[in-house]
Image (cartoon, rainbow, N blue to C red; front, side):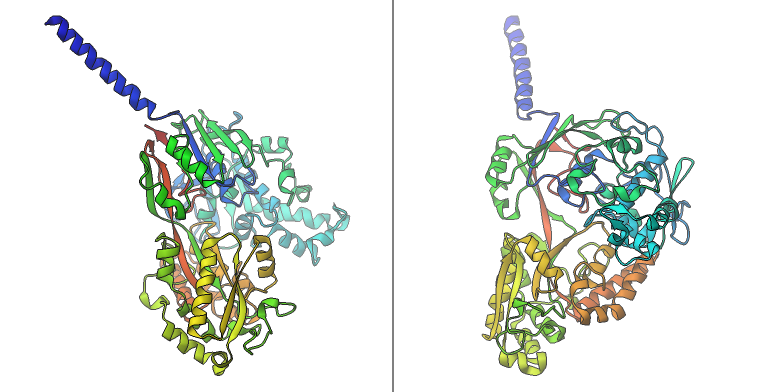
Length: 618
């Protein structure tokens, strides 16, 4: 009996140990995460980065002064700063022009150097003078200097028409040196100052979204190591050399492929468009991350990513919405749906186009063979098309339910978004007919129209938008002929900038989580999109929307801002400025052994990726 009892105990212990072995075997490489996605980084330099693939890597390597509090896009927690500035704690001045950040002591960079307030100041100064074409530096320059670019400031001080006028064969002409030095000494240096263990930002104008521009996830506000950056060949910090480091070519940028941050992970290897590997930084000021390694695998082919997930070779993968059904029932896989994004997709209708050489207008007349350049300046045309789109069917069928409606430029949950049904156009063929019959004093309905409508080639969702508009236009009036045209992205942008696209579908992804990032874009005279709607719209915006946008920017009262942005939404609806199609909803797909994931709609790489500092496997 005794021997049987001993044998039973032995077998029980063996089974328990065996079960532990089996469970462990189900979680391969418990200290490593493999994330399979599409498209790799463009750069590893925070001041160049303006794409999500670069941003999600920079997020892991570099820290910022403050961070969002996990899922929140409104609440902040300290990071390199020991406090989050507020008016209540006295770190934001009453006029909203001075922000003070006490800097955390003992923070180490990946090379072992200890962070100082000078590193913080250098990071922002270098970002301002770097200001590469098409880059993110405008978000620092606009609040701190009051200009859209460092070149605009330099041109004003030098009294020339163009920035290039000050150079001959790449060399600064001597007569402009004093003005160029003043850019740094009188503006850049004064905008960011060090006072003991504090860094003080002196804004050129009150700027309500300033804290969001600084928060972790905004790579352009990441903190870099001054001495190390200079050693690599970045700006030497001197006022009389800054223009030599301004607007470099990507791969000639000395920080293009090297990093030295204070974040929880440091760079080990990067093979562009193939793989990127990070390893844990054990001296991270918050304490070491749970994972030892994070591996990004850049795999464009869907089937390969799917098989990696199924086999457990990848822990997290990017899944297009159109392939979501292929992973929903996959064993050992978790699919998290319904995740809000700060993206909206719209169809723009410029009020006046450039008619010169513009084949997209057909005959250029309202004669049934084309449209005039100011076709969309008639509000009844815009309202007619606003009623002509089947918004709900599009979201349900084309976007497979992964989207919501927006009444105007502002995505949910930002200020300006509303669920007021009076501010949503609904698909209604009869109302579309009524509007079209009123357009152009009845001429449009009688003669018809013919023109091209555009999407960027390869984007099936935007192609579907154009196809639907074309189909229903023909149904509402057989004389309405809209031809969907897909073009390469470079050509798409070229024609847009030349103001030659009659109708075009495009999206906007938030730079930061504030309504101001959207208001000028879609409604202002200098907007990324609305600035190209033609003179009739610019005249309208100058009188009706610009004053409201400026007032909201400088307001320090959230309730006042809310009321202003809601008024802008009403204007956008009443004027039918654009077709506000939908706000995509994201999904996140991971093996069910991945723990600690959270979603923040403004951080680069989320929801597909992760904040790997909090991730672990079990």
